[in-house]
Structure formats: C-alpha cells, structure tokens
Length: 470
Image (cartoon, rainbow, N blue to C red; front, side, top):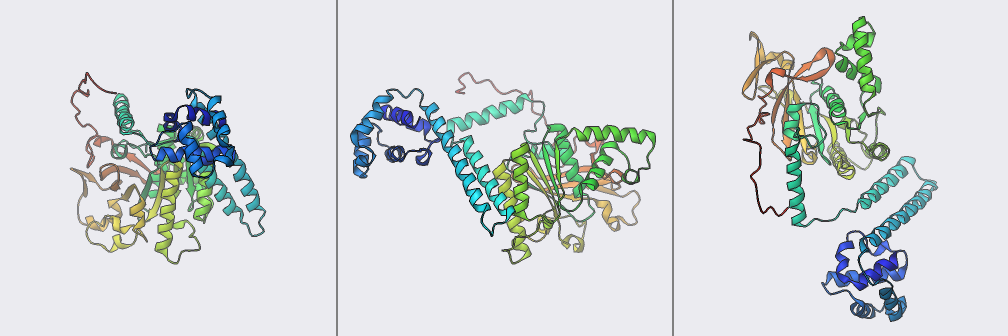
C-alpha cells in the first residue's frame, strides 16, 4: 500500500493535496518510503510540481537519491501505479496501519513504564489513557476546511436546526428556559454552577444530569467528591417520585408512595448514568477515570461535585495556583473528549458581607479568577428567601426577576453571569425543598429575563434563492 500510494502520487502530483491531511512522513513503515514522501512534502510546500523528474532532482539535492536505490527505485514506483484514481484509499490504509503501529509502541512503552520500580499505577494509567485518546483523535483524521466548505456546513446546520422542533443542539439541561440561553450544553464546554452553601447547587446539577439523560438520552458520568452514591440517588429518587426526602430516608411511606417510588426507580435504572463517589480524588486520577468512562461508554456529559474538593497537585504552592491548575485541566479535558463538563464550585464569603440583595458576582468565584477565564458558562444559584432579613416587615414579600415579580417562598433565580456563545440573564425556577429539586415556574412560560421563548420569527421561512451555490 505504501508503494501504491507513492506510485500514484508520482503519476499525479496534484493528488498530494487529497491525502496530505491523512498521512505524514512517519506514517510510512519503510525508511526509503519515508524519505521519498518527505521530498514530496518539501516540493508541495514550495508549490513546485511533483513528478518523476522533480522528485529525482530533490532527492539528489538532499543527497538521498543513491541511499534509497537511485533512479531505478523511483522509476519502478512510478511505473507500478499509472493512475491516482484510488489514492485516497491507499492513504487511508497507510494511515490505519501507522496508527496500529503506534498502538503497539504505546503498549510497549506502557509495559516498560509499569516495570519501573518507582512507577505509580495512577500515573501510568493516566499517561496511557491520554496517549490513547490522542490516537483516537488522530484516527478521526479531521483537517482544516476551506471557506466554501465551512460556510456550506454552517448553512446546512442552520437549515437542519430550522427543520427541527427543538432549538437545542447540545445536551439538554431538562429546563427549557435554560436551554433557550445555551442551546444545550455543547461539546468542549466547561460549565460552572456556583453558589453559597445550602443554595441547592448539587440539587440543580443532579436535576440537569437526569434531565439530560431523560431528554437527550445522554450518557452521564457523575463524580461526587462530597456525597456517597446512596445519598445522591436518594435525592434524585425523591425528586423523581415526588416523595419527601425525609420519608424516603426513613422508609415511612404510604402504599401510594411506595408505588411511585417503584416507578421512579424503574425510570432511573433505565438511564445511562455512572457514579463515582471516591473522595479526595487528585486531578490526574479524576482525568484518568473520566477518560476510562469515555472510552468504555462514550460518555456525553460529566458532572463534578465539587471543584474545591479535588486534591491539589503537589507542585502548587497556593490555593489560587491549585484552583487555576484544576480549572485549566478540566477545560482541557472537555476539549480533549469533546463533551461538556459541569463543575460545581463554592462562592467566597464576599456575598455575605456585601450590602443589598447579596446576589453573587463573577468576582465571588472562590480562590481564583482562572475559573471565570476557563469557563464557557458560569451560572449562579440564588434563593432570595435565604436572606429573609432583606424582606423583614413586608407582607407577602415579592422578588423581581426580569419584568416579573414572584413570591420569595420557594423561588430560585438562576443567574447566567457568563455565556461565551450566547446571552446572559436570569431564569426563575421553583425550589421544592421537600424533594430537593428545581422545577419550572409553569405560569412563566414567556417571561425569562434576557431571552423570549416565544420570539416572533415571522412566517418562519427563508427567502428563496434561485442561484444558491450550495
């Protein structure tokens, strides 16, 4: 196949551009073939033609002609393959075999690393997983797109989204109002959900995880560094079955509640969710476990509860360096696996000492501004009833979100403070404390601050273009 590929390129040098994104010098097994392809690459980079004469001269100039077998070797290759019709197939096979050799090399390196007396298993695991994910990325063989292809792809995507009933093209959060802002959580995004303690950030994250699994059929991995699996699932079942968490914990339920619990358990058991409640995970170990789940189960979404509980790497000297390192590592992991990662985070005490409504700001992200920098989306959970002293002496106190006022009892405001690819604003939700769950405010279907769910798009058609080049 290597000879066939090189022969096809000698017969038609213009075919080089059709395979350059798939193969490189190191894709070839035989040294002579690597040398010949390198000369072709040099000619192509100088925009010179690739043929028998130019290759021979390039090899002679580099002092490599006799080393590879002289003119007879090059001529023989050119005569073996008089056409470039199947050049992409040849390149694909050469690329595939090169990857398999890389797997062999990776395995050998792993065996060598594992036999080192000073080796640590977690470090070897992460190294092997990282290199394997890199190989998988190379297997996809993506290349740069021309403006024509990029615009065509974008127009096709717009028309596809227009033809769908839903505007969501990422992983759905389970909350329509939130999806209006984000169009779902998209590949490579790092999403931060931050709040002061007892605001319900874990409850919101679990609601989003189950909503994503229900609505999008997403495969979700949950890393819980604070609660064990049983505590998390109890909370999730309470919300799913609409049974008070305390009644669920004690088992003191009515016959009807047992029936609802059984149905809710069946629905949850059918979801593709994975739980890891190992406490005190180091960032390297967490990344390795995430890669393992992704490799084995093609995970679509990862939820981590919470950032400040990840054990810091030994090389950092301060809390800020640690959080910055962890934040950047998680963003890189999201890009590497091409999935969204939701990370919960604590807020600093600055909100408590600030006057007014004590609503969180981006500057309140605890320990490091790097979180704000790395995150694609930052959401705050704010429940005004938590600060009842602000409404002291008021009868039926109300709180305003956007252009609407709501009773503070059970009200939650989800503040989207940063949205790299969309609008910012606030979303009102109900917090049902008994079930530790969030729910939409049904009477507020079109009053979200910042985004209207019922935006008028006219007749919902695009103008006809007779000479559409696509």
